[in-house]
Structures are given as C-alpha cells and as structure tokens.
Image (tube, rainbow, N blue to C red):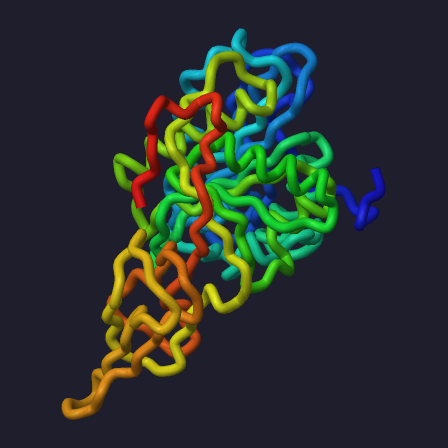
Amino acid sequence: MSLMYEKPTPIDPTVDFDADGRQHGFLRLPFSRDDSAWGNLMIPVCVIKNGIGPSVLLTGANHGDEYEGPLALLDLALHLDPAQVSGRIIMLPFLNYPAFRAGRRTSPIDSGNLNRLFPGAPDGTVTQKIADYVQRYLLPMSDLVMDIHAGGSTLDFVPFAASHVLPDKTQEARCEAAAVAFNAPYTAKMLEIDAAGLFDTAAEEAGKTFVSTELRGGGTSTAASARIARKGVRNVLIHAGVLEGEPVMEPSLSLDMPSMDCFTFADVDGMLEMGVDLGETVREGDLLARIWPVDRTGIAPRDYRAKLDGMLIGRHFPGVAKTGDCIAVLGAIGGDHTPLSFRPEGSGVAG
C-alpha cells in the first residue's frame, strides 16, 4: 500500500480488525487539552467478522447533526448475529465524534468539517487525523463503503440513496447497484456542488463501491427516516454478500441531477417562504421560493424560479436565509428504480 505520508497514524484501535466475532471498542486518538493533559478522544467502533468474505465499512455522523446513521449502526452493532455474517463489517456510528457530541456539523475542537478534509493528515488537526486514519487504514480494508447522511440542522431532503457519475463506468454501475439495493423511497444520481475533500471522492478514487444517502434533516430524525436507514443498511449488506437473508424492497423513484441548474442559491438575506414543498413537482419558470426583507415593510420579496422541470428534493430548513445559502434543490424524475423481481403486481410509486 502506497502511503501519502511516511508518518504513522496517532490513532490506536482497541479492536482487532482481523479477529472473528463481535468486538466493541474505540479508535483512541491522543488529545491533550486544558482539562486532560494526557487525554484521548475515544471514537466508538464495532467490528463483526466471520470467516472469509467481503469487507464493508459503514459510517454515520460524518456531520455531527445527522442522526439516521448513528441510530441504524448502533442498532446493527447491538443486534446483528455474527453467525449471519460472511466477511467483515466495520461500523463507526459517530465518525466525527466531537461534532456529534456537540450536535454540530463541524467539530467544536478545530471547526473541522470532516467531509471536506480528505485525505487528511496524521500530524494535522484532530479532524484531519480522523480523515487520515479512514483514508490510509480503513479504506484499504474495505470493498464497499456506505456513508449515511441527512440534511443536518440547515437542510431537509426527500429520503434518497445516492451514487455519482464516475469516469470508470464499471465502478459507477457497482455504486449505482448498491444505491438501488439500499432502497430508499428515492434513488438519485447525485451532483455535488464541490467534490474536493469529500469522503465520497476519497473512496471512489480508491476504486471502492461507495453509496451515500440524504435521509431528511432538520437536525433530527423521524420514525420514518430511522426505519429507512435500518432497512437500507441491511439491504446493502445483503447486496454485498456479507449478510444472509432477503432484502426488503419497496417502490423507489429514480432521480437525476443533470446540471448545476438543480441548485438555487440565495443572493439576498431575509425570511424564506417556500413556493413548493418537498416531493412536489415544478416546471421550468415556476416559483420555487421567495425571500422577504426583514428590515422594513413596503419592499417586495425576491422571487426564485425553477431553472428546469423536476421535483423539489432538498430545501433550506431554517426560516431565515442568508446570501449564499442553498435554498432549493431539484431532481429530474426518472422511473421506478425497484428491481423487477421485487415489484409486487400492480405496484406504483407515489410522487
């Protein structure tokens, strides 16, 4: 394995990734601070291994205010029978653990946005050290990687699993198949505003099968979004050949993001009024949202209109928007993405 740095990671795992059975432990990262001179950051990890087979890396709370991933992975770590596993499952429910404990998107220690700091650095900030360990030690162990996201405190989405357009079309097909297997109500071919430093990019450039999600948002989970995450994780593990059983498949609508016209950004500050709700469809030119001034009366709002036909799949969550905020995301609607063998007779997809 070619390492970007000669320097080894400061992170010391308390689990043996090659040992069979179920292990609950930590990634121990030395962290000297005012209240603990020789302290450590203890990032929870669970490894379940049984014999030979594929290796799957599952992560949640890459951003600390997104909760479906942690809920699904804590449940899986507690209840999964190792005898049902063929291969290895590595679970990190709280990838950016300091951010999760603070209920923030970014780390309170160094303001690090983990999902913008790959490949990281072993001698960098705390968040860079976490990214480096994932990049140099966990990715090489893994065949399939799933990073479970939601909208956090400032975005809300229709619940979808996602893959990306990739230069390697064979790899792209593997990633899309894994996203379809997750079987969220929507399955998207996702366009990123900026892919630099993403965990997604690191995994894909390493040749891994990678699937991500956006499962609602608003800085909380719902009963429905937690169910989607739990079902989706098991479906992907079955798809990967690591877990026994039959996947639970329900109708899933295909979404595409063909261009940056999918995104609408605020160019004024003010109070946000949505013209359509999540899951509703629009035609090009339809009103998506307006932003009202909040410093005086008698001023008309700024209107934002759809640049293409599609469905509102994401929106700014707080009621006030600032210049530069992403206030709306559109997806072009495709067909039923449920594999034919799992479609009940006469099934359809709700819009």
